[in-house]
Length: 211
Ligand SMILES: [Zn+2]
Ligand SMILES: [Zn+2]
Image (cartoon, rainbow, N blue to C red; front, side):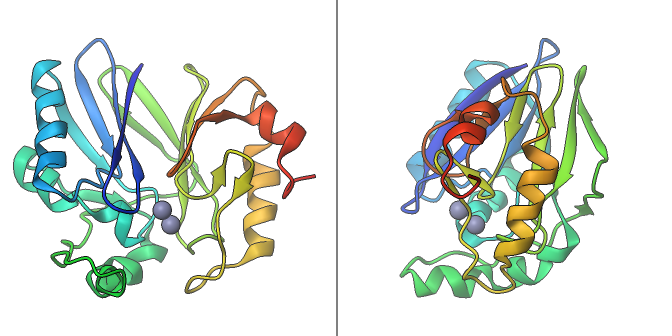
């Protein structure tokens, strides 16, 4: 599996494109906000001859939903998210406004994740691991074959997701991270929703929230 990370929008979200030898790709949290960012994403997809087949959201916070509309209309996709975060999708445009950002109301998702389900594209598979607490419907996407975890805002390099937002829950987040993520192979590389990459092993050793 190949991966490309973009840092998009004023909140600096890491948008992720994953693809394999079939050239089918998934776009996770597209996050593009400025027209230049949309073009950057489109150009990347086109120059690598990729075919976007799924639009996945790690959670419903507005900064991660930016770009959904662009991806939906450019490649004819509908978004997928955990159903517990629908209320956040509905509030996203208002939340963005509080940050002084004008965002069109996102389209409602077309499909909802189940914990543990396997999402396929090309010859690849991503397992949905549900870890609520940063948001009630937060999920991560895991490739066992590629030792790769797309963690959204659940786990960060040296930190964990904030839990002071609507329906956040610190205990629940910690328990989920310990029981569902820290049990993965220490070599698993973690792509976070913001900031640098890390590994499960590095966070297990030195993340102050987990030690
Ligand atoms: Zn978030
Ligand atoms: Zn975020």
